Image (cartoon, rainbow, N blue to C red; front, side, top):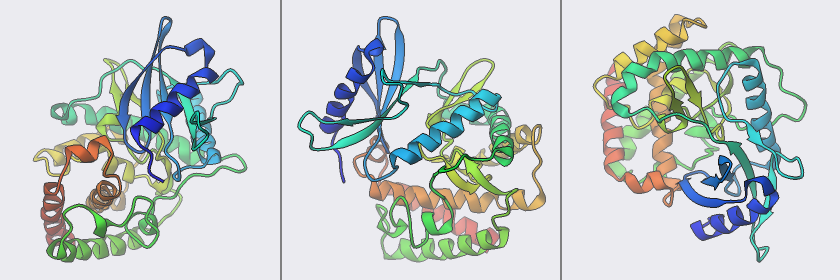
Length: 324
């Protein structure tokens, strides 16, 4: 079900009545998978996330918040705390005034920090690698509670028969010629992921969207926000997601090396983990092609166009030449 900005705003306004201590002004921060609003108040600032329909159930959102709260309490990650509603709920189901649609809403504390600029990617990536490793170490040792439910991001649910973000073949600019190149790449990705496998040391709970827009950097810390896509996937997929939309940079190799250096201060990477990095990067890039095709109204989609697929084809050819 598609939801327009006016509907998101109507739900956001209605949601504010559930948080009497935070009644104030609303301003849209972003429209992507969800609509995210800045809540201005005399006593401070908060962030309201209004979930789009037909993506996560309320139980899945509760599971996300449980995992993140556990990591936060253990000191594994610096992230925003949930602000409970007047009723004590972490997730509020809020309807538009006419009752036509009901969406899930979550309020978070506002975190200080700046999104790292693209030109700082190399400089910041060792710190990000260290942060990611702490999260992964926590995931390996944590036992989810009963009823825990999050999406799985494997081949079938990304580029295969059950894609969460739509078919890559429906991406913008995927014509017959691009389809041949990208189809060969998808087949190569499938083979290499099957060889790599899903051993518990390689596959578990990950953030799954650690791109620059979901990081806040302070002089002493890298903070991680927006765990909406978190789920079960390969741990090395978090590196690939951190490189989203940056895959064609000339210094990507240096960024990867810095990330590995930071990661290995906390956790180990074996030769197969390192060897799978180019495949994870292409998996993520192909998934972004699918996402842009299935989310035409998202703010990010408006900023990108068919050349994104053209660049993806160039990356795919280089990948096939090196790894097929």
